[in-house]
Amino acid sequence: MTIRQLSETLINQIAAGEVIERPASAAKELIENALDAGATRIEIATAGGGKTLLRVTDNGSGMAPADLELAIRRHCTSKLDKDLLDIRTLGFRGEALPSIGSVAKLSLLSRTSEAGEGAEISVTGGRVEPVRPAAANRGTVVEVRDLFFATPARLKFLKSEKAEASAIADVVRRMAIAFPHVRFVLSGSDRTTLEFPATGSDRLARIAQVLGRDFRDNAIEIDAAREGVRLTGFAGVPTFNRGNSLNQFAFVNGRPVQDKLIWSALRAAYAETIPHGRYPVAVLAIEIDPALVDVNVHPAKSDVRFRDPGLVRGLIIGAIREALAREGDRAATTGAAGLMRAFRPEAQRPQTPWSPAASPYRPFETAGAAAPHFSERQAGFADFAAPSARGEPAFAPPSTAPRDEEPPQRHPLGAARAQLHENYIVAQTEDGLVIVDQHAAHERLVFEAMRNALHARPVPAQALLIPEIVDLPEDDCDRLVSHAEEFARLGLGIERFGPGAVAVRETPAMLGEMDAAGLVRQLADELAEWDTASGLKNKLEFLAATMACHGSVRSGRRMRPEEMNALLRQMEATPGSGQCNHGRPTYIELKLSDIERLFGRS
Image (cartoon, rainbow, N blue to C red):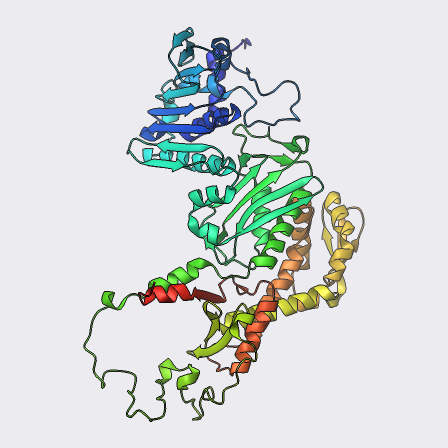
């Protein structure tokens, strides 16, 4: 076959297949160009989900007529000179505009601040028209019509207009979080407008615009650095979680990325604090020397490669865990909001006539009569103690019940005042009340004690009567043996057995009979991927969590006031006590102002 040079239009259409996958991809490239041009106001207008119309208007530096001619030519850019190791802009390849122009109807209208008039250039399916003068404000207007009209086969793979419009909105949200000093406005054909006013240097205010005010109330600030890499941002408390990962945002040197290393580190940082199937809410920004990260590994520039992935992963996990240990034990405000909704106003409930016979409570008979008892179903309050199965009250009366020597305001979780349904502790705080799930709280306390014991001393090991030989590639054997000392502290004894095998001589006694070969292969895979092996540690901690669940205070047990207060004090002193081992919240806090609002007093 004869080899021939492809036409420029065909080359651009091939590039468009990689760079411009859907309207959202085109929107991302155009917004990046506007940001690189120094824009502080960006307006995006769409129709037909971006397939019919996509217009991006900015107030950036603009382009001269000669620059317009080069802008729509392949591999022409103002952002890159010679060094791919020093990329400090969002765009750098010079592929976006020619790729869009080869598959759509593209027009660029631009004017610099020094020019008296603007200029316009159009490209239709790869055919370029001459530059012509035009009236324009300072900045650039890029308009894309009939995307993929020149390659109709691509249109079949696009989703519905609503889905494509949603993808563009997601791009705008990510860019808005990354650049809080820029005002973004997105308008669609359904006449809805998404607007994010500039917040200057207040990134949390911008994040609240995108994720909602709840995130501001439940966010923990993160600021950590290690060996030239800095991590900033905000992470939600563990009890503030979602059913998908759409509320997780990551940025590297201001560039929004979807990087599996970052998401893996985020999952590891929240391990054992969030239920399975739930996802934390976080916004993480990594600042790193451009020479230490490669952003030129994916056509859409959504993936990056770090020169030292272990350093970045360790920084993310350590910074988030330190922040959670510092502030993460507070209850999410969404729990209080749900509690407020549960207490519906009386007018909204079905009204039934009240009668003494129908009431579960016995009225006072005389002014001097003894305090009545609640029914067994309503047991718990110290002031109205319910009889137990043996006939004695669960709590002593108020006159004889032990009280905290310190007032409630001395403790974040306050002082215990009641036990509801033999499972929930009600405590009074300085500015509200706290409801604690006694089983979940004590389960977490027992687990933390067991985990600390595991880390404080080597895990007991059981010797195998016949060592198990595990055949592995030589590289995996080298990695495992280099971590043998770490494994030995966790009860796993391994040693080299020839060039392509390791011998397992001891396994953790806690795990009993186990698949030693499967565990070793899993650890080898983890070391090859992340240069760290947490599988064995996770297995031991999972077993400790199971033991803690069965060894903690059970639901249905009546506790004395001093026991309840002791539980509250232990929770205050234990990191991670805000959620149980399964990730559920251990307590809900209700402020006094919320209670007063329920009664219409504020």
